Amino acid sequence: MLAAVAGALAACEDPSRPTATVQAANAHDPVPCASPPAFTAGPPAAGDWPVYHRTPDRHGDDGAPATAGRLAPLWGVRLDGSTFAQPLVAGGLLVEATMHDSVYAFDAASGCLAWKTTLGAPLDVTKHHLQCNNVLPELGIMPTPAIDTATGTVYVVAYLDPGRYELDALDLRRGAVRWRHPLDLPGSDALQQLSRPAVALANGRAYVSFGGRAGDCGNYHGFVIGVRQDGRGPDVRFQVSLNREGAVWAPGGPVVLPDGDLLVSTGNTDEATQFDGGNAVVRLSPALARRDLFAPPNWASLNRTDMDLGSVGPTLVAGNRVFQVGKGGVGYLLDLDSLGGLGGDRYHSPLSGGCYAIGATAYRAPLVFVPCDHSLTAVRIDGGSPRFDVAWRSPDFRSGSPIVAGGLVWDYDFEGGFLWGFDLSGRVRQKALVGTGEHFVAPSAAGGRLYVPVQRRLYAFGLS
Image (tube, rainbow, N blue to C red; front, side, top):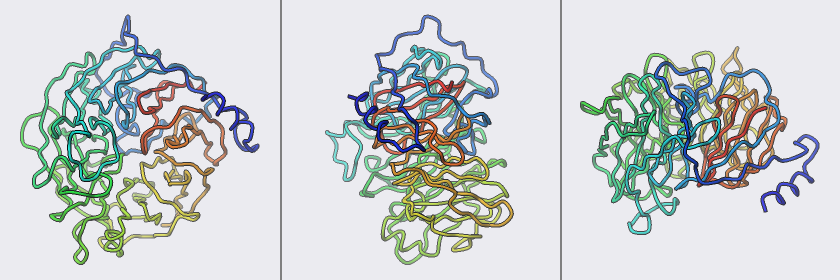
């Protein structure tokens, strides 16, 4: 069926698109490795992808200048649960986590299974009263983990029945659990909280972020929690607002700045009159004290209409500036050293053509690649003045969270089931049929290969 759909679509494509659509390899149950890759601790290698979007700044760029050749299907494996997490690669091992609370490590080249660790029973959605929820049938590991290559440790946020969160540290070489650390969410109902953002590593801590479920029901708050990377000692915590809501939920997770500070964006709260920290870009110290923020002057209207500014994380761009966009499709350019408080941006403008933005951006100067509801939109940042404009828009599809790899921009249409590859001018160069997946999922790239998580499957392609 997939092949028939691919052929029909290829036949009706216009000349600016690929003449054929590549199909993913057949997925099979994992086969144990006869000789797994031997991971050696140390700094990340040039070809590694150890954290969400590869680097702490979340730019999602592998740095390769060359244009990738034709996609070549390599392998596919079946997993025990759905996948929201971006695949990570370090030392030849590819790590993926599932909503069944399992973590897999594969040989990144061949797809054989190095190890699998299941951390417990995920929340069975059918047996619990969730006031809002659009994820079925189980809730386990949703956030992208993070790999510390210096110690060979994988940091994973597990959600376990009957409704509790913990941060677990796994040995990258063997998958053994080194320690488990409960995550306390004071004043909140853990059944109504959701952790979607990727784990961030900085300042000797692993940072975990929280929001609520689709629909904003129940007693939940937006949090960022910092846990020491050895699992010991007291946590540090940032709470967006004393009021309900205020989610930190964009999938990219906190952006780590060169000085160790963090940038996050926040969603709507239920406040209507006095600004309380929702719909903002916030700069946090390593101990999670709020240093600075920006919020648009219409924050109350954004609260009332559920038009989260925090549906996308901040993007650190050239000139010591920050680009931010959310569901409303208005882009803001901020000064990193003085974010601007209420209404103090350097420049703002709706993205031409419209953009309901959710997911994570990618960045290769001067372009920020923004995931929109009906396109991938490339925003050009003017290096000489605080301005931006839309450089190009893709064909109409449901954009996931793009990356830049092999000189192309890759984006997974999780509703249409296609992986798209664009050159930096916006021309379609590659297209692969992989099947429909989970919301806002991002591919990753390492060692001349591209990896795509598709519900209960994981596919690898060669960038020949």
